Image (cartoon, rainbow, N blue to C red; front, side, top):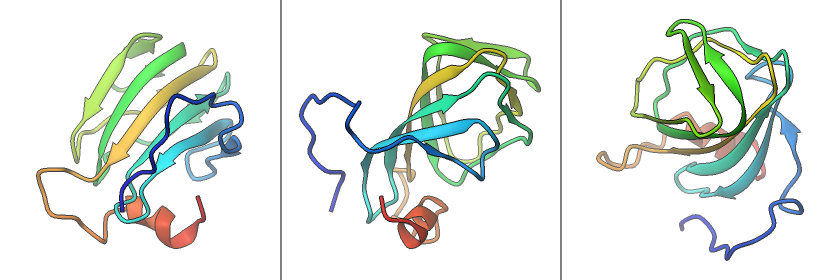
Length: 133
């Protein structure tokens, strides 16, 4: 199986915004597409004004992020990522912590490393095991 086929669509009626509790207060996601066999996901991520991601992060999956509105600050790297900024993070790349002085909206894709065999233990698969998307 792969991500579902979706022609250009209005994202307003696609799924509900829901809080990403494990990420911190004031952080919400809207799932756009999801592959239950790999855990690969595309989503919108909204961070409200004042949101914080307190810990440095490094994932066991690849992540690409494009900032659509607002900005966030990587306090360790002293980088202000504003609308139009893009990041492509391979497995293990360290990033964060973040503060969000003004709300921020980003588009993200998260996927298992395409250069390696499918890993059923990848943390992306936790969503498959624990949630219905």
